[in-house]
Length: 432
Image (cartoon, rainbow, N blue to C red):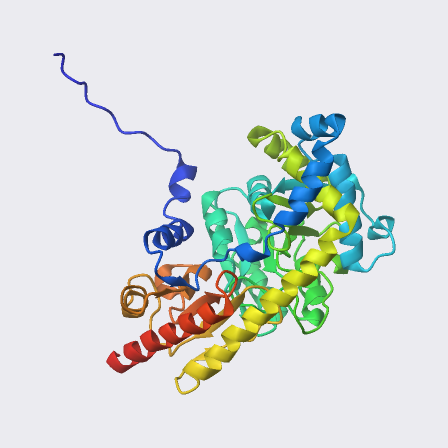
């Protein structure tokens, strides 16, 4: 038998190394391997709310016509189906309170349909950011986006935030510091989750939206710094004020990229997201997207277009809000019941899927912490460590926060999960 030759190691690209060890993969693995653990970590939607009946009915009606069915089953275009983009503009007009899509001040050339909004976030980073470029983000922010930035070799800089979102004065201070250090040319993007932020549940206050845009414009001396508004949770509003989009504050439509998705409000399995952006950026995004997929799934786009046109979408979203409002209230009531006597604080969100909890500074919540081990191995409950949601070196990130999701579990399970979590926190505090 001949000797098997030595197998050399694969030589990965720098971008693969930048994208290594994403926390989301670990969390998903933990959920699969520990099915008896009640998960307050999963940012998934509730299976019971998924619109199976609507999708079945609309699909059957569309597929009954062979010509329509063939069109749905054929390749689409890189920017997305014209019919679907037109439907998206109509939908956006309703969200923005415009009488017609024409009042929005944009056209189909400003709209790109993507495979969920995550693909849009990734594509924007690909076309705007070179290795070493800077994106300013809230502290905390969506931790998957931090991984997206790392994947292109960009640097995330945290902007202090409070219960009303990113603080414009702090953004001003950081941009001034970058200018003094000669690094302002590297600052290309400001990322903000404007509604019921993942992870904090905080919404950017109405008066801060225009102020934030004005700060960005003031520092755009040599190049335009773009604002990337991630409005994934916009339609999951349960109470509180009806807030304008940051995008609506930009009358020129030249400074803000609006990213939205139907994943949270309708179905993540269809993976339809969209971006509204300046036309030259839309062209750049499509050039990059053409290298990846020639366009997202045509069938799914046309299905969403039909759902929007038929009026079933609004009916579904209203039911969704009722369901998630009850879950949010169950989590907040359980927090009051089980954590009231502990030195713990939490934020009450007006929408979205998350509650942000803060423990005493000396109590760490990370994967290797006594609390995480106690919670997952003894009390059988899981959460997302808050430190994942902060930019910068690990040793300088706050380590005493945790993100809780009420999206997947039913109210009785939420009650039990919060009881278990309180038990883990109580035991950890007693030992610290």
